[in-house]
Length: 397
Image 1 (cartoon, rainbow, N blue to C red):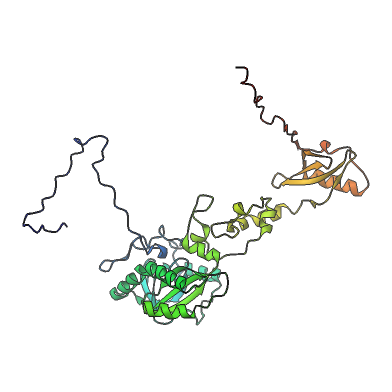
Image 2 (image 1 turned 45 degrees about the vertical axis):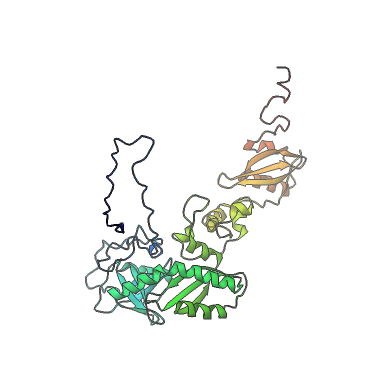
């Protein structure tokens, strides 16, 4: 609302422009306001939790980065079957954990609860409840009767949500301030993310560093600056990319930021087996490491290559020796060229290659590989590759 003028006059709002009378070249509509950043999106919330309203639509599966589908939701339990008393609670990004419910408490997916933490309590959202939790425990290899499973204290109260919202909204500014402090201390580290505990008494700082970092002085300054308990946790480059997010070369969101919960080592052998070019710019992801998707089809390629002969074996013919060049794995073709004619590529089926190798071991030399070739690539005309005309064709015009 505009302030009252000091001269006593009244502020009279200007009449709204008529779209029909406005020039065609000018837009009479104001630009749409820029939507505010939702700090709770990393916790699977489509909006900031409200203090005086029921937050039944805050957590929706289509907003969650690490979505789960309860495929047992519509199946009734057998008669006399005891309902499991564990639930899965989601926190920031991919951090999830299992908690035990009190005997007199029932919850639904999407409810905000206060859970046991060390020290104090944390605030999270129920991401999985019911019988599907039993299968999730088996997948994560967690013992149902383990005494290390923490407890759910209660459903979040108004004061709990108020502290939680205040803590989450200060995470970004805390991260920038911590980066500035670390830079002033000349520490070779990068603070990637900050996660406040729900009761606003503890903050976890995630960082990456090439070498060991002595951050004892940093912890003292951070504790004095933010008045909370400080915990430093080092993560790798892949975990950093999963927290920051981004778009991969495939045009989709990074797998590590959407559905991957654990990371397996990726080696260059995965690229070699799949006959990929050893180009670091092509094989590296947003984190600078080899792409995780190189492992997706690695086992399939390994199974397909079991019946292929050794590529180091030279095929001997009366026309000359032939060496291996490349492989079309799923068409089961191996490409060879003569040593004295490297431009003549011949695609030979795997069964024929094996037959030639066995004949060579028996001392028999076939006439030539062209008799076994499935496809023969023509020699490239390097003098006139695309059939262009002479450069002097315009001189006489």
